[in-house]
Image (tube, rainbow, N blue to C red; front, side, top):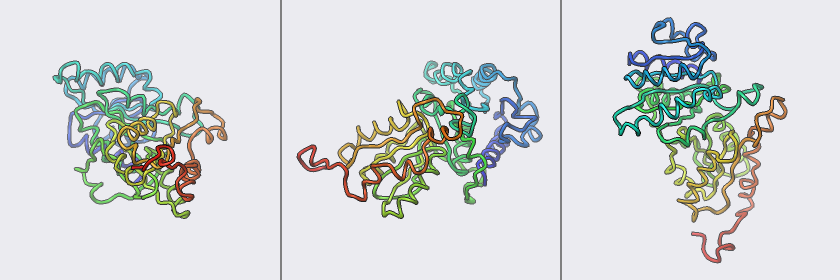
Length: 342
């Protein structure tokens, strides 16, 4: 099943199960979605539940939040999350804070979804990763699927959740095909929000990633295995809440951590993961934590520069921390601390 079909079937099934669910966004109806995620839904559910809007993100996002205030369950599509900047006041001030400011009397069951991060040749204004922007805001839940299983299970969870959810897809993953089980195809299937998935178990180093970078991390792990290095790959799935327990448990087993993301390095998701590990598992580290992230520049348009601005598989497999594992410890805590490591 492709990620595109996983998202489409999840929307279809949730709209069929709950008449309060409706879709709104630019070209979601007649055009069947800029990326065909909403294909067939206008014909099946009609224009009252699949609403094409003008090019006014602030307008239709505000309408969606207002509908959620009154008990409906809007799914708002942004053609790219870069355009959510036009609507960020409604996402943060209207949606994220209302439950707290109303002392729990007002829930805002709304999903903001669309492609996030780098695509291919679309320039700086269409390539920004907003995971850490939204993950820094209390009141929001932020999800980032990788596989078809992730896409189906997490989107269903997002629609059913009583709180606002930012659902960050990846344009380059829409056409990717992943195997899915009968359980995943069941209409009742749903994944828990806030729980990471260990995609590959290992014992020498923990690699965390989300969205498209999970695939890169898995490919890097295959390369490392040929050199005798066993990497554990964690698919974060949920950026907020972050599954700190799974991450720290893995680091306490492998004693090393490499974080991977395509967003900017400063104040990134990897930085938050590093802080969590230093706070909770510092004594288990046998080497400094390493962060692999996008270049600290707006995304270039030129293809050769664009590739250099986004982490590649070789950036992970050739990382000097990982390369040093085969040569035993690069950094001996006993030397620095004058005692035992643990």
